[in-house]
Image 1 (tube, rainbow, N blue to C red):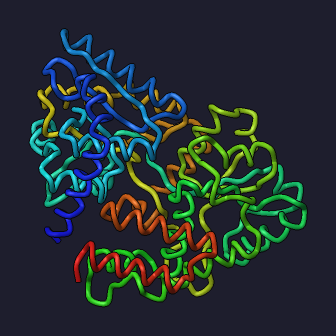
Image 2: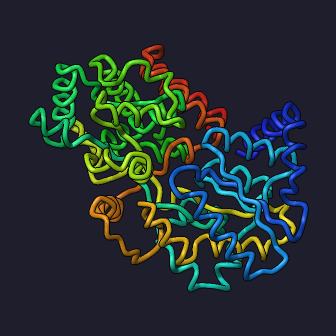
Length: 434
């Protein structure tokens, strides 16, 4: 385990060496060098996300004279690369967000992240504001390394109510029902699903849900923990791949899906134009659509991922996260105390109210929601017997990338389900041991 971790960390340094000039340019803005300047990085680029952070920074600066916050907001995939290079170059931001799980754990293992447990123990009222389940993704060896900042999120299937009504369709609850929707939409020249899978994690959502519906949460957990009998070559993983390829062969996705870019809104444009009827995506999509296309938002609804024949998983379980983003402090930050004070402003009542106004569900207790759509989403997560963190965030970075690559290949029909499972198991043995 330690050797694998060291190898991944050295890989980060290798990337940093190649991109040293870029890292030096970023460092020139003073990321972690000044005790009075706090660099904050996040991947909040949609809706009012950047404004929420900036407003919090302004409040912090007023209460902490002399301090300046430089906030940067970067698209998902570019953000992951930029953060990796910055840490490898020894020039990380003071305050940064992640999705928790495996990638954050790598920085923690390398001693690059501040243990926030002492701060939370000194301020139990602040700690207790958050949903208890939110801490799971950022807790390692009983220490907490991140604060749940953004919305509670679960992947659901969004759909165009008008199209469903036009063709006398109801939200499917079983796989057979879903395949009937696929057949009807296909017959009328409409792509059943919009999918922008150039980013790979978008298609991964189908695979994660199918594994969960087929085998329940323990199949993945045992494979990750390398528990007795646990393997990514388990028949459940193979069967999940077969279900994906059944969808592909049935024409369930708009053409060119493996080359479309989610970050530029390719899948949403298919929905807006009526060329696609559904999209499997995290709950944040509702907020994005509401801001981007209010008229279409009125046509939008969602349903949970359906059950599959003979599946052992509970159909109430969800794939997602209780927090969506978790904010941490780098060990190289010159003023840890000030950085933590900034995080408190980023998660105070004013910030959480702004998130609610932006059609998000904050990861705090007793949040008051008025939008019926969001209330249903909140209830879905609250009633779920299990919330499985996205695989590419739960797994160590190298294995998470392999998961995304093999899943994309399954969608492209360039890899068999058996081969995909075998590759994942081989990668797990190399990366996790045993």
